[in-house]
Image (cartoon, rainbow, N blue to C red; front, side, top):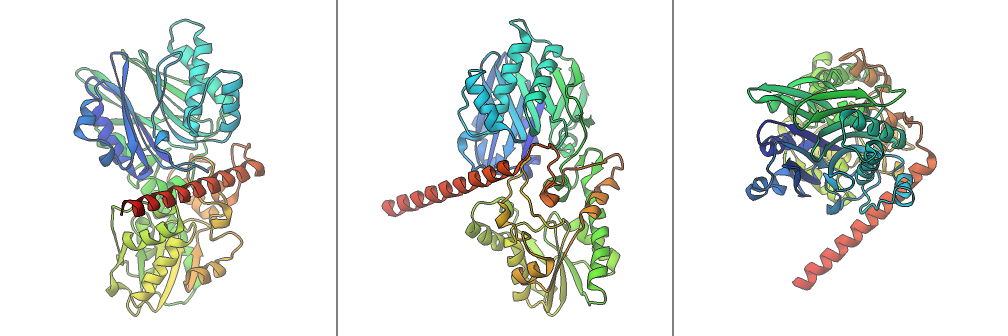
Length: 505
């Protein structure tokens, strides 16, 4: 998953882009990048790490211009991180274009082959974002027919991008000398919203992954970019939009509401905070059914994502809510971290226990989801070490049994703790007295209650149904092979680094 941001303003945009990236930091901690446009020239700085570490004052001074895009990233399906894959990406032919992308193309390998053999373009990295950039550049060249671009020509090119590209993609790009372009895949799997601000110098625009960015930067939200829609904001002003895809249907990734998005965002008309309250209410009903007369003394969330759900569970069951874990905010999200040892160590670094809330009590711990079970096992163990009499674990999400191929870096099926196990077997595996999972229908209802206009979702990581219709068993096997290769390479790199340290010593 990634965060993308684009700004067209009357003055300098570098500070707006930096501030916006900080607000999207939860969507990617591996790398960050900013590109600005000034006098038909691009200025770029990007690198691995958190936003605050990638950009220094001298870097910001080298990013002049009144238009720009920014990006922060985690690896997507089946990929290992490489500094060369930090975004935005740039291509100079036939037009200077920079592009930032959130999502994952499921046909990137075949597109690479087409790029090389038919379009005579070379792809330098393993990133599907570079593939998408080159597809866009090629289609712009064909649509322009040697003439200058206009909005209609650009929309024609985007229509052909939709025709060629499969999967999930929310894209923001700048075409040098023309303006900012943003578009969303025909299913609207990954989020994208835009807003504007009226100033004395004219109308300014921002496009971002989440609405929280708009509000904090002083922009009024206009609406979400529709599935298959493209918007173009000209360099000299002027807003244009068009539906560029056929057979569109809004099917946002439901995991955004469970885990990825900030609670203060509104995505496709649904408040993330409200959906999480609803998840808690539905989950409370199932806890009541499954645990019956079991005595529960306290409800404790795993911070931070599960707090709204835990609060609702506490109220619905009439059980006190307590903060039993203190979170170290400078440790990254653990299910995305590479390597079992790193994940296990980071759980203890990430969370500290408030012993008084556990000692002698029957504790209901609420988490947003259970993926590998590494975090859950450590949390249960920490609760028992703090003196808990009984430990029950409730998950706001259903069992995760299938990989997400639309832009979230998840493990292979063999690594999911829910693969081939019942809830009782999972409880035994992680050392809990019981595990209670949300039902998928209840999760869907939780989001729909926040916006009844949402009729369907991408729920593939729960039910294995991939809405784009092109994800085959062979593709999933290739994703797992790529992940294994990346893990092996990461191990080799780590071993080499350790050897270098020994040599230095």
